[in-house]
Length: 450
Ligand code: ZN
Image (cartoon, rainbow, N blue to C red; front, side, top):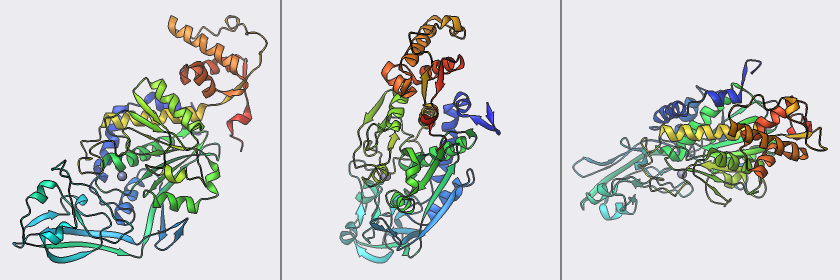
């Protein structure tokens, strides 16, 4: 099915091989992994430029000092290198080995000091002696290093030369945005953070999924328009909201995309509203998948759903992840590396995001044109397309549910929930009934003509 060269989303879903999609996403993650990102600076720019090679991303630059809601755009941070040297000139810690070694947003420093004094500026994880922790200090000007506990334990008393060749100066906050147009100006928001350095699940997995989703949706004939944001966490979402206070009225559904590459089961955190269509669509997809999953209520912790769901906006935005942030030991450490994110998990997350979008795209309300008594289905040849016995019974059941509940007040998602049948079955039944003239679509319920 095509519409001006565009493909039906169902076609994309049918052709998807999750392992292949996951492998391609993992390749992008590998490319972006070495870049030292932060909430501002060249690392974010380089990341966005790489994504812009595949999709026409618009890159915004907002100057330092700009007021955004209750916040101010901070100074831009950039870094060239950093080390800790022993008095014999050998290096204990070198930024070129891992960009996690420097406290992210660290002020510049170049001095020589005793181990005792230096310790105040060092972070390690005794419970995981080989891992480097990821630490930040965005809004208090400090300097510091992160290192493995083994490295720290090997440091002897004496003098150490420390150097962090970073700069904090007036510049910009950078974020990327792309809107994939659909028939309606109503939008679905998909937002990921781009502010973490070499961390894979927490950061790069979300970036890769959004980049691939934007690419796939660009090929589709769509009902909604899809707005993708690649933004630094917290301050980026606040900046976007400040600059788009009016535009948010168009957002009908939204998801914050993060942590989609680990081996754990999917977790959906509902929007603050709790019963928005996106909350119900994601729940339906996860239940229908038959895979283990968890549904949790909104809380003002986590990723940028905190900003989208702040009371002044209260947007219907949830967050679909695998293991939630902070609930795996590797979170915010060097162990969240290239081996921690798995192509199979990335591909599975991608397929589930496509399924959610499929439900949003195809959820609609229909009206039974023959509401007095059950219409005679056999006479209309409605069983002919059906193969196996079980399948036939399920589809018959789905048709009865759709006919009974299509009184003008129920959407296909409502019917799927009430009947406990898969959304796909309800949709198939509705299509057959519509084709036979027993149902007509209620135009206003689709919101296309807004
Ligand atoms: Zn994080």
